[in-house]
Image 1 (cartoon, rainbow, N blue to C red):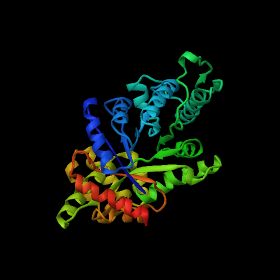
Image 2 (image 1 turned 135 degrees about the horizontal axis):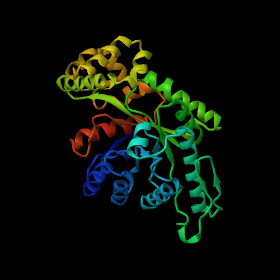
Image 3 (image 1 turned 90 degrees about the horizontal axis):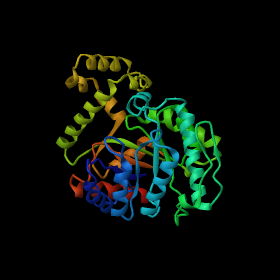
Length: 342
């Protein structure tokens, strides 16, 4: 199990230095989410500022970008990073596609599957000079002249990860993608039942092995050196669980653990603006289902015990290593590397 992190900044000028710090600490990957800014511009800065760490969006929205456009962008980033780029793709939800981007929302799962296959066909044309002739239900590409072909890379094409929660998309990812970005709000039980088991079905359908596929997920880890530090972090995590748990989207997660009554109370508190008291509804039992608790050196083994072989890479919630104490993060990274060697 490898340790990665993400970076959230508001300016291209603020990317290079923290990316270099994160790489120097020894993290496996650095991901940049698509929120207020285009992640690919920030990733371009990170690619030229670093030399070892893997880089990618977590995740980029597929449909506002044409597959050809994104194929070029990814090709350039793979070249600039010397083979360290990972293309993470997701659909977002209907409201954002229709109302923020002005797009038609139609068959998002099959469309994303075809999107991945189309990009791979374009990359094959770039790399091997094959005739571009991709014909699908949503996309068609059959023109690539030498003037517009960037030509082959000296490194493999980027891997493509999918970020999703829908069972169909999880199965699709296992069938055609190279990896998967899990949603961060989960328990080990719900992650396995809703995501991992569906990915496994997709891998079987595609005739692939689990070792050929990478799964990464944000996880909740309560860490500290003293009881006071750990108690404070547990309360912070308890509050976050209560906040997320008040959303109807996560009702099924609470039902999976027979916590329906808790969900109803959280939902009612959200409707009555009782945000400050939501944490009171999250018991220690619930907190321990969502999070692990221990010293920095204990966290890797605790996560391994909780998730088993489900995850290949994790990101720690509440983590901003570029801003925090580097010695603390270095302890955690060292613990992960030592645990991997065991």
